[in-house]
Length: 283
Image (cartoon, rainbow, N blue to C red; front, side, top):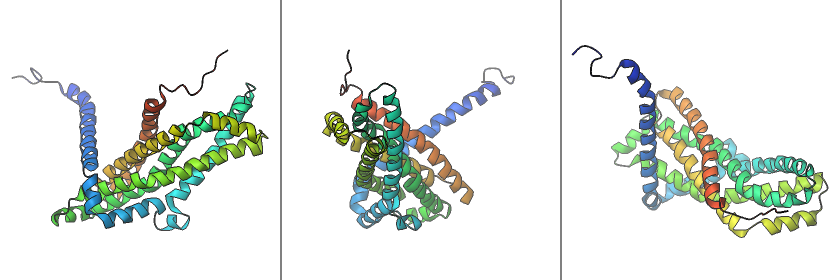
């Protein structure tokens, strides 16, 4: 048969190569994530000592980060300063409409639903996530993961599922600290810097803050933490190419996790609050 007759042209194959590779990579991610999640119950049961160590590592970090309180304190400070900035921007926006009194409403809605989940997710990726990628990547290139398999230790549950479980456990107190920091700084910027009445702020804050919002916010934070840790452990677990490959894996994981944080936050917020009618303005 002459070349090109009855078979796809090389240019067509090249054009389809990118989408097919992307689809294959997506399948690898899905298989890895589903297996890691499925192993969580057994990994928590079988590797209790490792689980406790990872919970402490996620909460307080290790090395120089542990000196300043680890990821918990880092997330608290980032959220605090983000709340200061958000309060300033909200005040000027409301002042243009002569609605400064609604500043308390903005703190009750924006901080738990948008500010804290996004900031906590990105901080988790930048501190804990990068550490997980580097750890697993170093173990992969030094053949430590292969050594676990040789010793009949399932590497994925031991190295990945335990880390996902640790993130799910630790994100709750981390998120609680970040939430309080965001609320305190939001009120501080409006009441102390711009002279808004504390009573007016608290009135609208208490009126529009629903107890269910706090529970929803925690669920949102847990979902973001699971996605971030899964992404970082995948890139570390599948790293190759020596130390350079580990560095590239960390960079890819950070980029992917930042995009995932925004996407997951949007999807979960839409599912939780899409039909909400907390605020109605009529005239």
